[in-house]
Length: 78
Length: 152
Image (cartoon, rainbow over all chains, first blue to last red; front, side):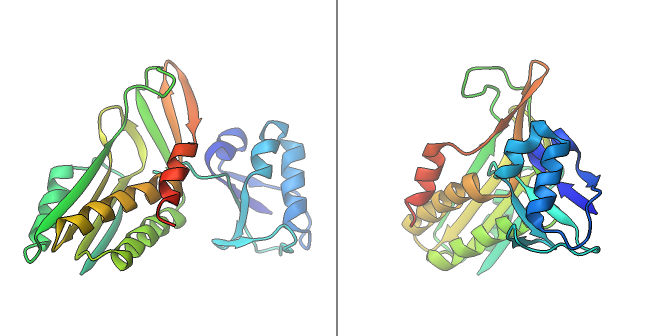
């Protein structure tokens, strides 16, 4: 499963990671797995909103095999 | 009426942007513009060589457009122009141009103020100040949010 990251998450984890998570899991599980794999980014992940296809999704959203989950930390503004 | 919201990868020339706006605003009586520069010093007093703005491939431009359109709808203005850079911006260089034209000056002043208050807190960028070999992430301050909240 492909996960896209921005801002300080991209700095800590990378802009794009392949996560070994089963299709059918929730966004909350993706968030948790990523935090376990990158403990330094765990706090930032908790503060980040999740998007699929550029639409905000809740943590209970089920992720399919073709979904690309994006995590956006709070924005800095311009 | 026109609304321009542009995301710029290269250098931003505020005089060129103002010239474009002035050309459009021939029937108006006022233009107010703001140019934001990359500061050479952080709030803590550390030297800053450059500001780095990460952006999102679709949401960043969308956020600029949303603010510009909301400004055009809210105030009695004729033209709204927002141009925002992303990437690495050396200290002293322009980051953002925000300009509006209107028949009367009051609406133009208020609209420009509104544009910047919202852009400072809502534009989808992730910003770092780089200096002395280290980078610090920047987030909006309480004062920035209070400025935005003035507009309800």
